Image (tube, rainbow, N blue to C red; front, side, top):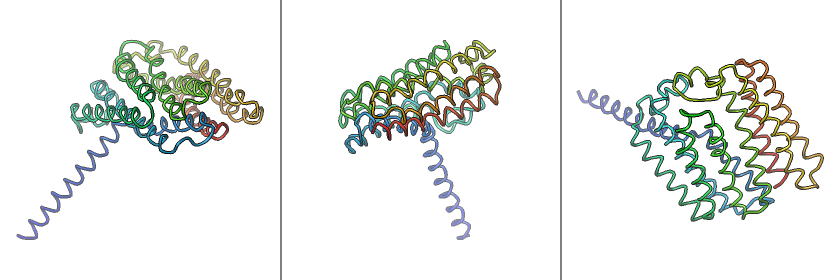
Length: 305
């Protein structure tokens, strides 16, 4: 009898612990940690490059914490607003909200609290301008990009702007030095998102169509527009990506070879996708984009920092 009660209690405690950790995992998933990590790498690289070395460690740390919280809040609220559509797509149906593991109200509360905390930290410990840039990026992502996805294919432009603006938080953390370099970094991240998004939009075009999302590959299913946008943006990355080396004559021509090389590989993948328009070419383009950005950010921090 006693051992049975103890066994039952142990099972109940194990279930509680399992449930607790599952909720922790679900809340972390709301933040889209991989996207946040990439955003933070971009903010840090921009700060180091603009400062000409490692900026104030404390200020940069607060800039990264604040940016992470704002980005996590935006992702959570995006999923709250899109939960009904996420249920219709296999790639998103297992997320915490469409799967029913979290309630919409708690995800919304988590997202709002995270956003508010991030904006306050950016404004208090970095600079009010950092809070303004972070807040504007959040507003574009949640209030513009998210609802526009079901209305117009131009949503990609708005989403790309929302993804690039947080780099200006890094620039502010670097005391606003080298604004031309910060503008270049924003331009690179803005352009980079088009080949990356076009590859994803092609791979999941059937799911986007079923969910009623107006992606480029839905309004023009032959892929001509998606291919053209991927090629044009990839070609733009070549001069934009090498511009930091041109801004400092001491870095030319050797330093420019790295961004030029990865940029040309990106162009080749985009051209292959534009001509073939198949899953294989789209996956190669997506992989190339995922290689390009970390390599370019590392080069930016090392070459200009």
